[in-house]
Length: 331
Ligand code: ACO
Image 1 (cartoon, helix red, strand yellow):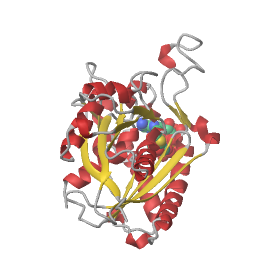
Image 2: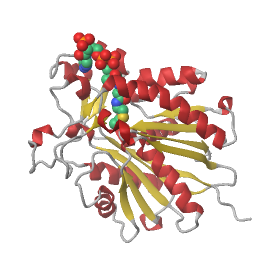
Image 3: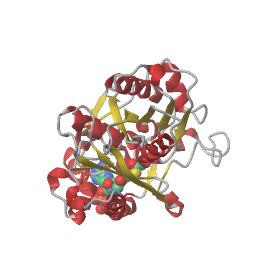
Image 4: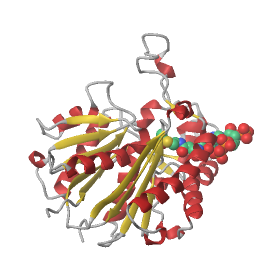
């Protein structure tokens, strides 16, 4: 029988050069390094420059992932961009980045699942590739979240950052790669986390000033939702893969808050060291956060061949998703 194992065969990241520390934020809003660090785990974040856009960092990360996979841009059969901060309503950020990467003709589209986008994208890529129509899919998570921040709202502006991270999905040795995935959503929670202005419901020309186009969040409710949904997702996806919780080597949650990650890991009864956490230097980078943490841990040599890695995401929608990978890259 033909091998249908599909996995991550290349990774790449790009973060804007400009950084903003908690100490810098102390000069903008009434906050403190101590408050931000103890409540979220964040020390610093990258901020997109005035002269760049989300498609620029997306394209840079995408090309690095293609090179890391040992491929040429022409080898990519599809581009899936996942972003909660698209450059335009349309055309898609995927098409803008496609042109910047010197690619053409392959289908390219944006997938909107907020911070769960990378997890959704991996699931979709796996299912599309199982049908044998596409050999290499480039999945990019990219955000310019800080363009949607109200810099006078200390409850949100300290939490987010900008970044892009990409993965090439392609064939891997039999038994490795993406073993299982799980996706879900509950639109009844749409009001908990949103950017209310800028779409057709409340366009800037229709009713609202452009200054109202910013992230609005019920932090406490999102926190409770995340602590509940992460263990549920992990248990579900691990069972789908036919594995047990204690077979997990690494858990990579969406990087929204260290306290969320720690509570979820505790609920699952996993050893703390199995959690991958890089929020300290990046903040919450939305759809880029999971691939960024994955790429960083991979580059540091933390993974060995055969490791079971679970990705778990939650975000606006509300949405959630999880993926199980038997690691094969670079080993
Ligand atoms: N600096 C100092 N004080 C602050 C700040 C700040 N930056 N922000 C809020 N406070 C104050 C509040 O005003 C409040 O003061 P009060 O008690 O006088 O009213 C106090 O700190 C406590 O506020 P809480 O909201 O209870 O703080 P909490 O411990 O819940 O932490 C946080 C807030 C960090 C936002 C937390 O709720 C959280 O992480 N929630 C989840 C956020 C999340 O995951 N978001 C994104 C998910 S999906 C996506 O990524 C798109």
